Length: 476
Image 1 (cartoon, rainbow, N blue to C red):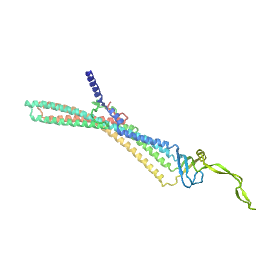
Image 2 (image 1 turned 180 degrees about the vertical axis):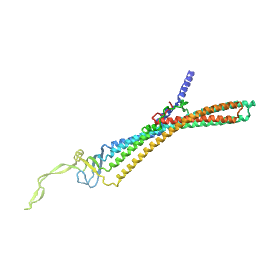
Image 3 (image 1 turned 135 degrees about the vertical axis):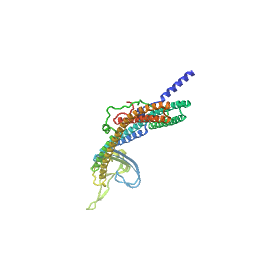
Image 4 (image 1 turned 90 degrees about the vertical axis):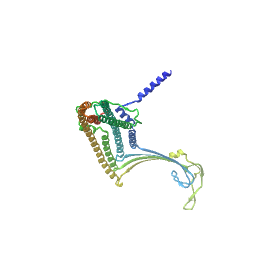
């Protein structure tokens, strides 16, 4: 049983270990970053903010409705608003009020403000797309940098292996007295130089991995391994697209251009809204109110009054008395519900506001909006200009890298033959170690140049493909 448990534990640990070593492809790195990058998440929050602005501007087109109620007491002499009489004792009052307002016309300012916020929302979404594209390109750059140094490491290891073999062979020849010891020392110095170069390349790989991991916001490079696609041959298009064709496509698809176009359109809405302030404003308002007052009294008991003198006749001065009438002698406060019904008041108003002079604010806002249109137009022009320059530069760099790769390939073939010949001559003592090392350095330099030209071309063509709407990938 213990053996079975031990074997099972080993299998589980091995399984977890194998699955912990995730191989990261370029597409996997990009997708992970687009999902988990904190800066991207912050940019998404800005979209949420603008969406709230759009919703608020839509709701501002609806009528407003507000309610009001209070409950209070009054001491001292005051005129009761419901009985219109003086009240000198403590009086309880209640007021209930509701009002509604709607804008019928204000020069379409609210409509244009809504359109502005909708255009801002769309432009903000394109800004997020642009930022995500920048993150993707940064990751692709770092990813190719790792592959570049990894391949350069292979070149350095191969050269070091050749030098170590040559040192071993030369040591035997020195012991046999065929070669001078100075040649061996020079070769050992060359080995030390190449070992240092190997360490430097390895450090560059580690730094490139660190850069890539930091772009992904991963905690460390431990266990981080990238996929190494076969890039031994370059994918050279048979009919390369011109930079102008790439620009024509990119100028209508790139998110930064779309954002700049929307912001230009948005400034037009800002101008229309500023002009709307010159028009009269028409508002419709309605209100309803009622209330209760403790000073509102109703008689409950009456006394019949007779013989009450009210004056005298002009002739004879005979007393004149009033007809019998009911004199209230007891009161009670009018019921709350009855007062609410009796005190109800409804109002409907049409308000017309005509702007005559407001310190030239409206005219100033119009002038500023016109300046904003020019500024937004320049922003769009600059965005397109930068895009054109970037594409032209990437295209020129790709062509130069391809030509360099073709030339360096021939150089590598020639220097390889030259080195092989020099190695044969060195082995038979026809040249010294200095000449041998020079031939080897030329070969190493040519191989490094070939690797650099290859990855430069891959990166530039990948960027051009990206501007043509293709996803960033190393799979051809």
